[in-house]
Image (cartoon, rainbow, N blue to C red; front, side, top):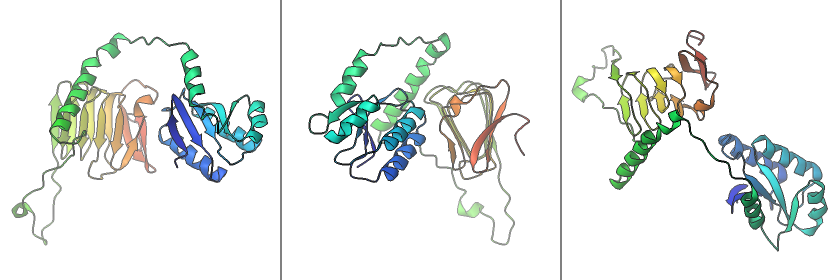
Length: 280
């Protein structure tokens, strides 16, 4: 059974029937996989027939708080009720309730936040609609939601003989104009875009990617494993960033810096630096 799962209007942390240290390590791994995804969620810690100490409960609460998750209910056997009260948690006997109704009640009492969109955000609605329409069209035709990139291979007659030195064939694809949601450029070589790459748009290149504008879509450089490939953009806020086999899941959340920025691989991870400071 997974240690983290959705339950009603919140999350359930399943600790019963397993070693606490193993369960805590698995929970941390799942939270670290999607940083910020669970922020604002409420959780029930379900202990089952097992037991838990005050120190262990404190460590669990600290881990959840670090990821923006509030532990509100402790579910287990009766001997855990004093522990729950000492920690300020509502206790639910596991035979009576799993805590889902309590989480739903507390969430309903929370004040609703009114979301205000800026003019720039409203202008992107059409781009996201284009991306959704493109995905729906591909699904109806039996294709995958995300295009599978297949680069053309030269015919056997064009390959050099074994004793002939092979020279890499490099090419650069230039695109002038904005790439909107649902549009994609795939190229065996470098890609240069003179314009913006909006959310829902996709760039995949075996070489470098250069955007003379805002990069807000998906960018994958070095798609055939070139760890030396780089991504350059004037306004750097991609929804997803990849170089070779490395991926930066939340590149758009990085601090915004004026001027051209460059993404590259350093020590096995993607690093982003202002142009001119990236290590060669």
